[in-house]
Length: 219
Image 1: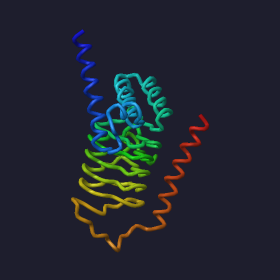
Image 2 (image 1 turned 180 degrees about the vertical axis):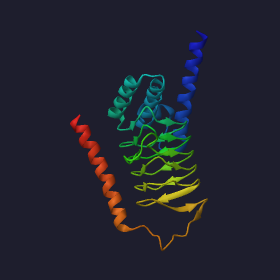
Image 3 (image 1 turned 30 degrees about the vertical axis):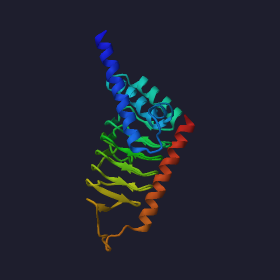
Image 4 (image 1 turned 90 degrees about the vertical axis):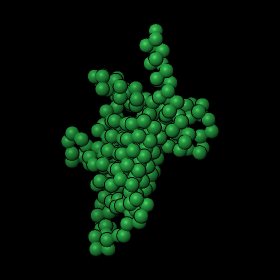
């Protein structure tokens, strides 16, 4: 009985911390009850926690069943194999996709339409790793098995295809670092991004999204 009570208390404390982290970052959240009942990002993360526990315990099918049900209910797809630290806040959340080998540190914030995905070229570790306190803006795509460092900010609609150092801000398609340690980075006028390659990159992301939708319709 004592063990059951201890587990219930730990579960309650975990939920309380998740709600508190959301309220700290979202001025629109007026109460704990509102977050618990109405925030789809909170519901998706809680479903992920359950699915992940089943996944690592050797029950991949029920884990996927929970994650896919959560996707239908919230519009947020988190593979149960992903590794997510405490305090993840998915704001609004519709269209967020987090791949199987993605890793997310503590106290990160993802806005709607964010993809932590792969390029289709890698095996094993295929998805990105986010450090602690990372903010990823709406519509941003982070694609590949590299690291985005602690305290980084990824601008809305950026497409990140390579590592981002700690304490950096990255913008653009493909993304480049424009600020580091709160100091603006001088742009290299010789090696500026090629607009043609930018357009190809943008089209590739759109094609991957369309292919994913076609696969879902075929299923």
